[in-house]
Length: 301
Length: 91
Image (tube, rainbow over all chains, first blue to last red):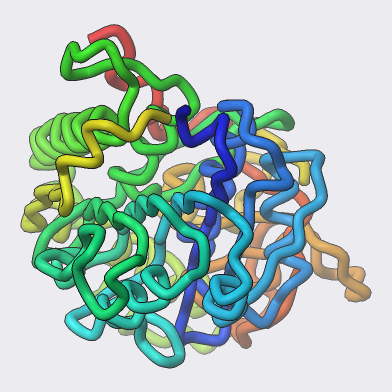
């Protein structure tokens, strides 16, 4: 029986060491929620864990995707809930920042902090974790398979990373929601994973819609867009380089009129944001990976 | 949450580079409840929020916090990103 038809907990996860996470990361999960619901997953099986002080704003943003009411808990609750697990399987989507310390959080989440918590959860049989954060490769090469690690009876864990020991790529998009189109800088890999889940299909020709298919689909989609955006951005980079120099010059002159100075500063910040985004996309390499690939070929969505 | 499209000329107080960042989804231009009658829009720039008047000009450069977004604004006559979901459809 596939994951959607069995007792599976679907987890949308965004931790942050800052008082509030970045909006673009919340939007990654807002889009994810819409895709999970459109795949026919029961709202009772979808759990949202997002850190942040402005709770009402987080709830407003998730209302873009759904008319259903969700409890949006902080991410430390995820680890507490695991101890009282009542599901057979767990599929987790992680967005936000990452570093060599692991997933960004008040206390950074290391690979073994996550792995030990998943392995110790009572009753879990299969776990799939999609990692969208930068340097997701620090979660590779850990004891993920069944019978490995501290808990010999723990679940089979499959880890899928958007990127290896590199930053992960995000790109501007607009996606259609029930009330209109939302624009944000989306995590490329996660967006394609969610897209596959909303419309699963067989990539490798084995006749099954498996987790392995989601990995291949999201990897190809991300890499195609990466090449296309680098190609298209070359001319823009040259133009924006000149605009950035001009904006620096204008903003360095204080006119004495506060509103004009504020506008000049905002313009500089806008041009700098565009310029640095183009530069960083041009230099970031992304290559996805999967750990514990054998069961991933058997687990159907 | 509402989504509204306007002409870029409706907010002459906002520089075109800022409007491009808004349409690209890098920054967010939105409406929210506020008791200040002068404030018509808010602009979220990374972690900071700026209050804007009816023309889109900044009212203050002091960042605001804990504002609840309830309407996103985009510019229908400026470039918008292509949907990543549709970009490779059918290929």
